[in-house]
Length: 201
Image 1 (cartoon, rainbow, N blue to C red):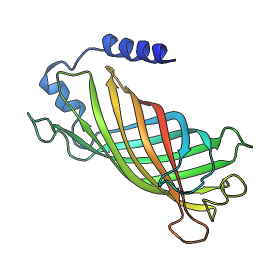
Image 2 (image 1 turned 120 degrees about the vertical axis):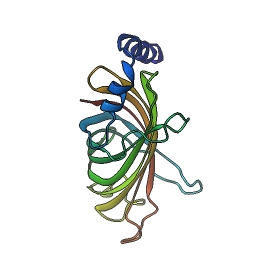
Image 3 (image 1 turned 45 degrees about the vertical axis):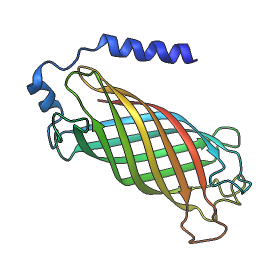
């Protein structure tokens, strides 16, 4: 699996040209530009903070999303050079080892900062944000952790985006937090490691 993933990364990077000239670079990441994309991946809960016996859950998910460049290129000629994006995301997650219990989410308050360089075919990025969801994981598998169908979502992640002539691919990790903020009890919440492959067009 690791060899296949490594081969895929190398192929995408080598097959795509670096940006041609500063003008093309600044046009591509101009303020106001928008794009659609999505992430497909797998998540698994873990015991954070430790000390409580949380349910062991795994899930497959799809996160379609929309982005708008809020700043254009900022902090030029520095290590922080990049662009800040407004990121809006929907989502569907299904438990994989139960009866496919669902979670449907929407996260309208998210930002994505991409560390851009005209001499690279790739850019590291940081993702942060919040949203809300409806789910039925609390019916049986996570009754102890989630006290209601309505839940808030918190996202914090990092990734690497690989640029094509049109569109991009990405490899991503995020910490995915789910809880109802004490609206109903019990509510110790769930935390998950989430790994995904992304695309933009």
